[in-house]
Length: 162
Image 1 (cartoon, rainbow, N blue to C red):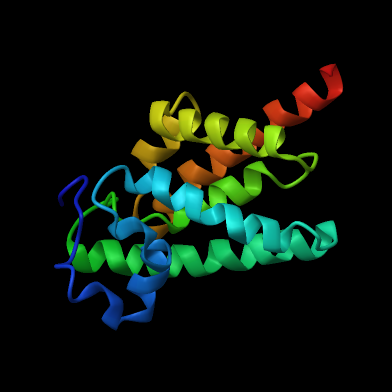
Image 2 (cartoon, one colour; image 1 turned 120 degrees about the horizontal axis):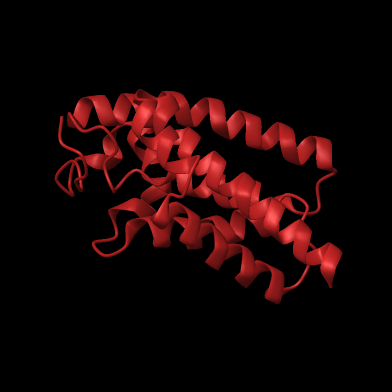
């Protein structure tokens, strides 16, 4: 399997719902830094979901996770790649998880964005271990869930300190 790749030709990706979802509604088709663009695309979704009660917010994330395991796994399999760069649904979910209990305001949003991208790119333990040891749709999703959880914990530590 190819490790990273852009995936299908630009005219074909939108034909299948699982590709639409895996590509973050098209954000992953951006030619440069698709993971960062996918995370940016999650910001409006976060602002839409943020007013929900915590239980509903978490239910939405669980639904996104389950959909992502299916859509990202199926798309990666069809592309014959383990984790194509164009699949960004996982970044979107990871960022939403990172911001789960963050205080409102642009400084927290920016801090969450930067921390999440750092964790996602650098893949410190246990993120890197999950990335290497778990495959398929679950593996695609889990490393970003871990990056989102670590970001969430750091943001909460910052809230407690400040």
